[in-house]
Image 1 (cartoon, rainbow, N blue to C red):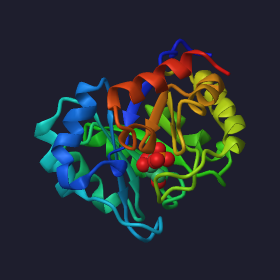
Image 2: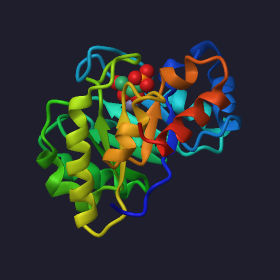
Image 3: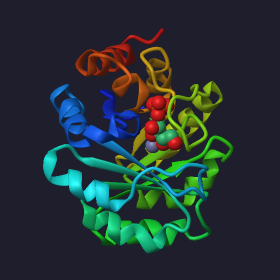
Image 4: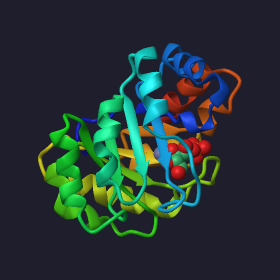
Length: 225
Ligand code: DX5
Ligand code: ZN
């Protein structure tokens, strides 16, 4: 396994109180978050709607955190520029979102943003094999995308292990993020399988003390069950 061991914690704003969005971003920044995860849903690729570039642009000056933008939209190409301009530091797009993932990832890089490829539970790991030279991260969905608060799919652990091997074989530094159902109990499983970024909505924003919640995710990740 590569030397990417301390997992980064990326709270997902989807589970925050949107009426106080800027305060909610500041609160996780103070509480020790590494990145802010922003879930964009189109009601087409996934059966839900969430936020667009306007909200991300409005929040950008309120925080120093890297903005980790997860696009659950199809088509994706017409919107990459808008999210880059809004201040995304990373853009993840789904390998299932269209036939031209390779070109879309190049577009992301061309806009000065770090590209990531996201992969749904039903998609085999080999589906991202031909784009690993283009990405800085693979985002493994450990739930079916579209909603927060779902149960972690342990069936995805083998895929995380396979992707970790595939990523390491490239010789490039590729992070593996896990997204969906991450808790202090499931985080150690994902990290043991090779994940080094933990996206967490409910288990941060759904808790009374964000600092304690983030610390629990980190420390759990260091003491596998
Ligand atoms: C699901 C989103 C996730 C979601 C995770 O489609 O991509 O980022 O916010 O929420 P939890 O952590 O509650 O499963
Ligand atoms: Zn997400």
